[in-house]
Length: 255
Image 1 (cartoon, rainbow, N blue to C red):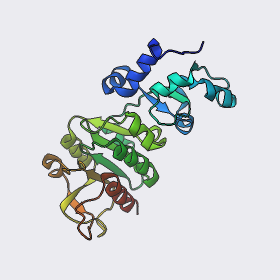
Image 2: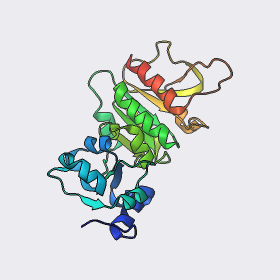
Image 3: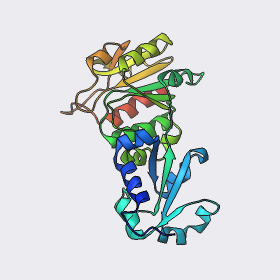
């Protein structure tokens, strides 16, 4: 049966899941839209699939052997998060990791963990997750007041890395930094008073502490760091975009 009304109960629930953090938290699920992202979903995490009429007609081979709900093109456009919908959306199970799991699962070789404090922009957070995979980062620890990692804009920005980069959310970031240090991980805070990041400081197991786009790290977090580092700025620029700064530091740690 094809769903043709936006007031259909399934559609209402799908829209709430897409738009509301509290619904995502209560159900332990989130939405993923687009062909590329759909193909990245781990089989065991897939809950349900919604496709538009036109998508089904053009992608029968992709949908072969799968159960899915068809909706009219007009209804799909109503709940899509993009201007030009591709016609496929899935509901996916959320991952759950703890800080200790992030610490204990890091590579046996030199590893790096990224610690995020109050990163608010969904695009920045998604880009950091994507770049973390590319840079070989072991995992991400973030404060609970960061943007919701399951926000559709974050998911889209990760380009599939959300399914492969382990991450943990904590209500007590200073305590998480203490846990890192107890495990022998050297913590480096991105800070205006730090030494230049490329002066050979990043060695052994390390954690990079990255702060809010406008305010930087909270003092109670930066005070926990073993060392302060900074990226040099030329011209009149005071700071870099949070995702760009994090990328530079992640690749330096890898190098």
